Image (cartoon, rainbow, N blue to C red; front, side):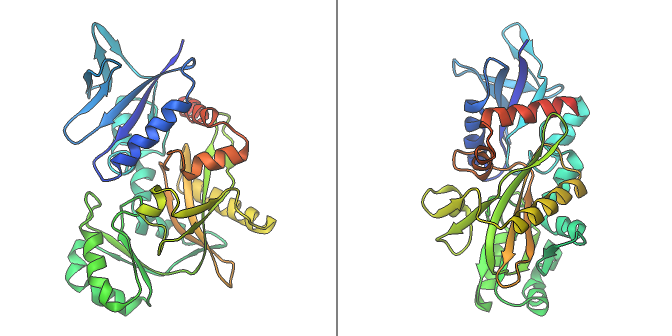
Length: 334
């Protein structure tokens, strides 16, 4: 009998448009002979599935089921492809835990924690060979004195970003003092990001993104890294999602020592944060020192056709459909 899979997409932030692209790509790759797939949209005003006839069917939030005609569809697993809140910050995971529905992503606590960039860095700070850029975490109560706090602690240039955002939404590279107030306001006011801002000192070096996942057999597998070279000032929203603005090299040109060091650190990050399913870790190798600098972790990485994880899965020698099936089967055995 086919597994019934709720392919969860949408969301409450500007990342919803990426979620729809991710879920569409995943849907195309999954084996329809093995899985019965129901895309489920999570929106602020409603949760629903649209059937082949274009009819919108509401989700029963008591048990996340669908009533189609006289038939009730109950799911075996939720495949979460919802970037941002509520799919990446632990809210949806907590709900699924409460109703007993397995899901493919990290748990509620890990998801909530890793959505907070400042808190994540604090937990990872003592991992051997891992370096953390100097930073200041600002809350809404700090807003009036935010410029002073940053200038007192950090040296230009800065990266200013929402502490709980994704897809580089609300992020600015600040090279001159006069740019800082506008950058802070942009980050503080980014929708549904909690009115917290992380400001970091800029690290000069090569930028990489690398996935890791636990398969159905319980093995922790590190995928080949991708090097990111962009024509933009930094790897912003446009660079991530507009073809031609970024050169992405998969597998990245790294020495054996660099590959082994990165894999060791990334596995330790996965274990330290008690991750499940797939995650992606972004990092710099600092110019001149070759030090590994943590940027951030993404617990529901983008799965559009040009996204890093599909590139890395292919470079590893897997088909995307087999990869997503591993995530589903792993979630069912946890």
